[in-house]
Amino acid sequence: MKVRILLTVALLAAAACSDPEPAAQNMPAESSPEIAAPAPPVAATTTAPPSEAGAPERVELAQAATGAADLEASPYQVGVHYQTLSPTQPTSSSPDQVEVAEFFMYSCVHCYNFEPFVEQWLTTKPDYVNFVRVPTVWNPLVRLHGQAFYTAEALGKGEEMHAPFFREMHVTGNYLETEAALAQFFARFGVDEQTFKSTFGSFAVHTKVQRADELTRRYRITGTPTVVVNGKYVTSASMAGGYEQLMDLIDRLAASERPQN
Image (cartoon, rainbow, N blue to C red; front, side):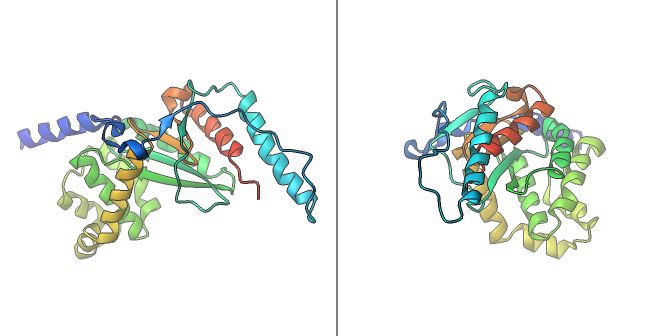
């Protein structure tokens, strides 16, 4: 028993908050995004003929220009506080929304500490922002947890179980390192063992895990928590200067990407 516990702790230490093999190393050359400084923001033109709607279009253009100007005038600098992916990567959100994706690991203490800031931000985020969580799946243990994340999501219990999953690991000390341990944990939320197993092993859940792995590689995620705004901007608390600064930066980046129509 002592050997198994020590092995589990060692696995957690290896997984915690960083990728032992940076995703970019295994990416095909043709799909590997490069980190690059963005082109200077283009101000909304005033020479284009107005549409019949007139005022609404000008308002949307003005809002987009304001968001870009706000980012440019902010204390945050590209290459220091955030980076730009080139080319911009596709997102799963609708065209009228700005996607904010958090890459995380349940075993990462920094992700656990970041969660209260995310929860607070979710109560005030703009309607045009679509927030998604993406579990990294760098090794068998965190892949198991990613599979559990998508299992809870498939069962309609994603939000209900997300924070308790963090607490189970970082407060209770239950590392949920086996499928059996996960089944017992899910049972606390009204999920019977058969339902858990069938969902956990389903094609839909495995497909989402594979998609999470693909996104982690395409976005070149090497540590957690990392936030990607609209498939274009990559940042983290260590880059931004802290969790509060990170939330402010996310808002500014999202505003600069707000759709114009």
